[in-house]
Image (cartoon, rainbow, N blue to C red; front, side, top):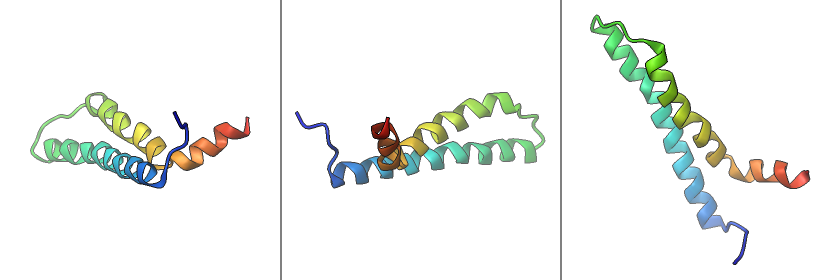
Length: 73
């Protein structure tokens, strides 16, 4: 089994990563809507969903660069 990722797989990984980032950032739109409608949103409730999308999404979207870093070591 080959351990290399072809261009199509890498493109798909980037696409998924960017969508995860978008979803992670869009959590703050929900926070803003709750705040604007008079609610008292707690950051602690939104931050895990934000980080859960942005952190893995940024790794996936930049996988080719991340892979180069690990290959150097």
